[in-house]
Image 1 (cartoon, protein in one colour):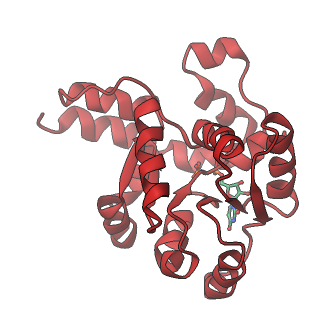
Image 2: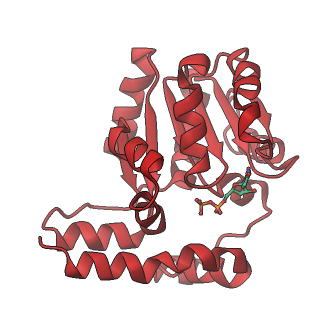
Length: 225
Ligand code: UDP
């Protein structure tokens, strides 16, 4: 996490657009059947391990990674850095009202956190350019897009030259978490690394994503190291 933040601060200082993917196992499986998403994934400026499945796969491949670096934790840490350094942050995504509420909660948690705009993520792809223009006017350094994999990454790639955020990152269900709409799992389940099971039980929509997990495990087990 600390290494990731050092890299992200360099990106911010560079004042040029960077795309960051927070990769979970289900998203990686999706990238194997979606060419556009695959190309974005491979060309991203940084990929972070956003699930225990990815940590397990990395260990098996002989390239162990120390810890998970999730979208939810990066939102929190970057909001804290924004309070110290004034980084301008934009929240795009989730149902109407949720991004605004998440922004409000994070401003209370990190006084001085500079969230310059927030907007819901329910609009058709042919409106991407209009939404991008709206966001560009707020001149964000950091753009969090919470619209689910791979819609959020496709939005970022298509609009990054218009928006110009130095760090643009897909963060999945993070605004639901910070707004209080989605409760994080009890600490015991988090410690047992079973938060995914909690989310699955609370949100049956996730079952579609969960179907990718055995596929991921199978591909890791049958791939050569
Ligand atoms: N969402 C959105 N626009 C859409 C579809 C989904 O803003 O067109 C939001 C949804 O409300 C939720 C987030 O995207 O807040 C997706 O969360 P999820 O945890 O499913 O994302 P994941 O990281 O698992 O892909």
